[in-house]
Length: 165
Image 1 (cartoon, rainbow, N blue to C red):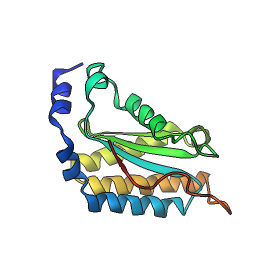
Image 2: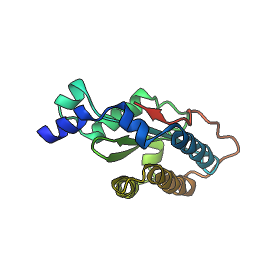
Image 3: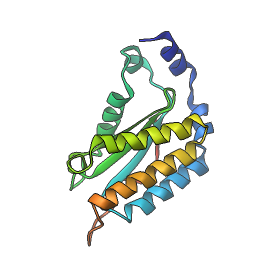
Image 4: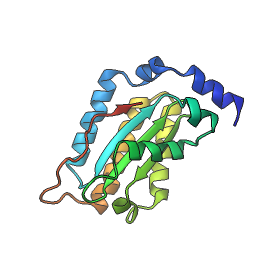
């Protein structure tokens, strides 16, 4: 574990998350998720976490492992068709991780999700947080629509509202 990572996480506080994701940006992300879910039978959640603290930080928990924890905490695995997708941003590390439930992971390779993550991270490095998330949702929508077209009845099983941890 590097002292630089600990420093970044200890110094990044909630106001920096609010600066990158003010209310109107979170509202736009929620609208994009709602529109996305009309085009496919999947469920998308977006979560942003400013920084790790306590045990996860001092155990040097990787963003991927934290994203899996958040996936479970938000109960994305609890959909009828195992079609939940989490787009997770650990802001202190500028690391994006996408975790897909089993029903989706069987049809969409992790490499395809990784490509979306890297494109989003490039946007974030340029300071384009809203655009990066919206581009990520658009790319995820294309994959989900290809593999999970909307059925006659695909209820919205998860909230569309972004989660700020």
